Length: 518
Image (cartoon, rainbow, N blue to C red):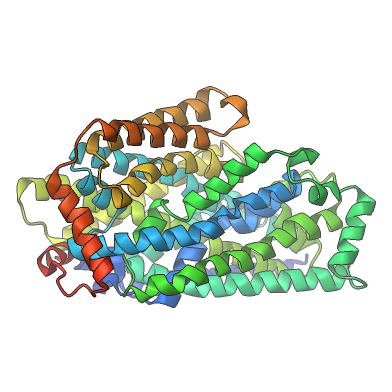
């Protein structure tokens, strides 16, 4: 690539970065005086925007950068993590009830619901700390992907650390300025950009490298160069690994339901119509966009690169720079930024909300019957964002695992531990505080042991074992303990009456919402 092309790519990325920062900071004053506006966009996001922001927040840099690499290494079995497509329906079923609870009682974060449903400040504090802790490695993954891609695309002209620092500034300044409203609108732009880029990439490589038969010719090339086994058997290295595929699918499903930044999106919908439309738009978005990504990793890359390509982590960047003209390299880098920035800012915003709402506001003001200055709540949340970005950069510098591992080994098993208690708290009247606490703690211990110290037995992942233990204990302990009747009335009888009557929330507790908004 010529020096002129590299210079233009760098200039283009700086212009894009400035646009993202401007988009966030222009709302700084509007969001400074209202926690409700900063963290939930005044609960007014329409169905299309909600679908876009939810979908691209699930995809992340893992989808565009890590998934093609994993498909190239391990074969078509990695496609199993599209379990998130099915979980899109779970998002609707769970999300509608959570939305009603958020409207009725002013909930903003996952911890809001879990702390109140299971009537335990201690449980809420533990959950908030765990979720905040394991947000860091997943945010770091976005920065790692951006840094690596910039280095490859600019042929080392931009150093890794500078690329990561710029990415960090873009993400942090965008959220600090605009909060959830800016994040949601920028996500809509990003998913459009990402979808268009994937179409352009696939069209270029197909026309240029497979001109006589398209994907049929590509598969023939795979047969000739020895990479066809990636299509013929679903597991890594030609082995049928159904247990790994199960864990992969479960991870995809959980990422679409109870990861903290997705959980929070259940509260921001403008109306119940959001959930009706998302019942079909979310799975469709996953199928279409994810399938395009899969084509790159499972057909295009093996056909062009052959079986012995060693730098698989940079597969997409190398394809775009060494096998395509500079304009393709530029839009590929833009697409990675779109996916990475969208997920990083959403996760950091959720961490900021939990720190300010569930720790700062709840423990230092609400529990002491003190009124909090809304400006201080937002300012505290912004301070937490800066601290988390610094921690993320430290993880990026250490770089302890492959990109995919940041999601699957360091974050997903721990985020997943709120799934059993969330499901039980939403749909089972007999779910108790003791069951939720013991189940969640046991699940966390199992996840820690099987992630960092002991190989999980029988080939099942740490995620599967921890969920089995967690769910079983939530159920068994709840059977021998008792839930207070006022909790059942508030979180089941009340919400069921709204759902089954088909009524809009005309009797929303305006007082509680007003208190949150202050």
